Length: 362
Ligand SMILES: Nc1nc2c(ncn2[C@@H]2O[C@H](COP(=O)(O)OP(=O)(O)OP(=O)(O)O)[C@@H](O)[C@H]2O)c(=O)[nH]1
Ligand SMILES: [Zn+2]
Image (cartoon, rainbow, N blue to C red):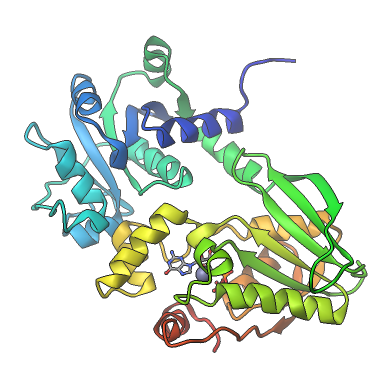
C-alpha cells in the first residue's frame, strides 16, 4: 500500500493547479516543460517562465486559424512569445471575447520543427481544467527534476492516458428518494468519476424493468437554459419535457451530465455567447475560442446506464451523435424518441445551425 499519488490523482492535481493560475511541469515522453494557463498569465509569472528559456504560446489549430497563425504541428500551433510580448497581448491572443478592450495584434510567428508533445499535453490539461485551450510553455531539461526543485505538480503523458480511462469509471456515491412534480416515485443517484472530475446525476423514475429498453434522456447541464429560463437554447424545455414524458409513462431515467456548454464549461460558454453577439454562430464561436464543436465525452452516460443495469434504451434526443456514441459504448438504442420543444424566436437560428452543421434532426 502506498500513500503516493496515483496517475489520475496527479492529473487531477495538475488540472486544479492550472485553474488557480499556478504552473505545472509536463513530461510528454522526450519533451519536458513548465506550463501554465495562458488566460491566467501575470507579469511576474511570465518573467519567471522567460528565465527558464524560450517561451511559446500553445494554441489549438482552431484558434490558430482565427489568428491567421500557421499551425505547423497540425492540431496545434506554437506562437513565439518574444521579449516584447506582454501579458495583455497574450490574453488578447487567446480570448476573443476581450477583443474590444484589448485588440489582438498580429502577425503571429509560429515555430516549425522540434517537438510539440509538451505543448499538446499542456493543451489537454488546460481544456480539462475548463479554461481556454491556450498554454504558455517553457522547456526544461527534466520535468521530474524541475517539479521537485520548484515544488510543482508533475503531469506525465502516460498518467494522462490512465486518467482518460478513469474518466469513464464511475462509482455510485449515494441515492435517495426525491418526490418530483412529474412523479412522486423518483430517486436521485449521484455518480463520481475516478478521474476526480465533476459528478453526474441519474434521476430514476418508477421501476424501469432492466430487461427492456428504458425511456431515457441524456441531458447536458445548461445553467442558462435549465435554471434561469434562457431563450437562447432549448435546454430548459427539453429537460422539463423529458421528465414529464418519463413521469407520464411511469418509468425511465434522466441522466443529468455536468458537461456545461457541450463540455467547455460555463465561463467559456459565455465567451462563446459574446462571440455570438458579434455575429458568429454556435459552431463558429466554439472554433474561434479554439474548441471543437462538441467536447463532450458520452462514454460517461453509457457507463452510468450500465452501472444502473440498463443495456438498452429508448433515447430521447434529436442528436444522432448521441445515438452513435451510446451504441459505441455498449448501450443499444432500441428507438430514438424525438424531443422537439422550446422553439422560440431567439433560438431558431441556433437550432437551424445545429441541424445544418452538427446533423441534428429537426
Ligand atoms: N458551447 C456552447 N454550448 C452550448 C450552446 N448552447 C447550448 N450549449 C450547451 O449545449 C448542451 C446542450 O445539450 P443537449 O441538450 O444535451 O444536447 P444536444 O446535443 O443539443 O442534443 P439533444 O438535445 O439530445 O437533441 C448544454 O451543455 C448547453 O450548455 C452554445 O451556443 N455554445
Ligand atoms: Zn442550453
